[in-house]
Length: 372
Image (tube, rainbow, N blue to C red; front, side):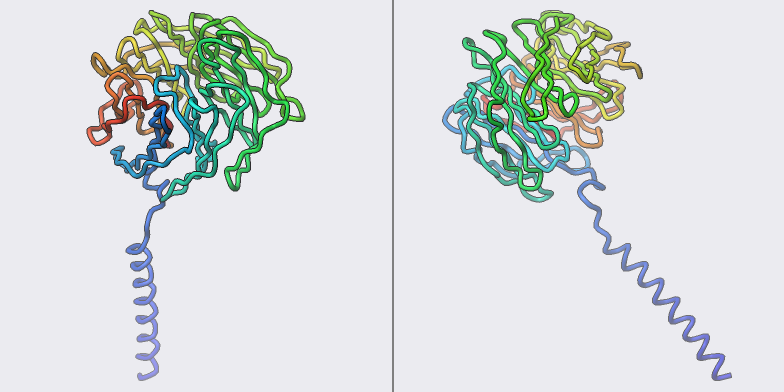
């Protein structure tokens, strides 16, 4: 009898320990930032006396709070840059690149879950940087050169462990005079595309084995003033056209840099600026500075723009331009240059719902936005 009781007691004890262990694991479990869908939203002050990166923490409900202001150690332009990609996150979201248009430099930042720190500032050959692109171990910068002079591009190698940049010798390449170039982006590892607003051109380069731009090709935009663009899979790009009627066009880019139009759809909102593609690549959003609205465009699996609607009417005077989606695509953030605010919206397919706790005031010269 004693033996049986002892065995039973041991069994009960082991079961109790197992249950306690499971309970302790559950009680002490702390979701990661990614699991809780938390992240950051960034903009820059763009002051013509200094330039600071403004870092906003984003909670799982889309609300923002100012976390820090960090000097880029560069100088801003003091006004709008007319571009997309002035702030660009690396593809792994661990680093951020920021243009300093006032002193012709870019700054690199390390983005950690609980801290954002400056890696360094890097001087450019060209003038007035407005857009940055990163893919793999390469970073390319678009210099608009202002109202006069030749726009140009130039490249850096990127240390994916430290975030440090090193200039690629002889990579500085001129575009043409008075292009008012608005964005540069990688479409493939060795193909970059530039939107030239004033010349109504989309220009591509193929990078050679030394990561130098070659095989320049230019293609006419389907509508006036190609501005910003979002890059999808399979070489598809979605370009906003900032004319009075405003539109978005989809294109296919080949591995040799040939750009072919797929479709064009007008939204009649005026001044389409930034293009943001949702994670499923089924919707592209455009911010319309002229119409004070955000439009959504439905996309078929072949890249055809099939319908457009107003996802949100921001109201007169807001002048939306820069925009970015959270990592999981649940929240869209927009910098409104007319009202000097950042707004946040919960994404529900073709409609957006305002998040009250995401409205943040920014300095008057603030420009550029990146989010995750």
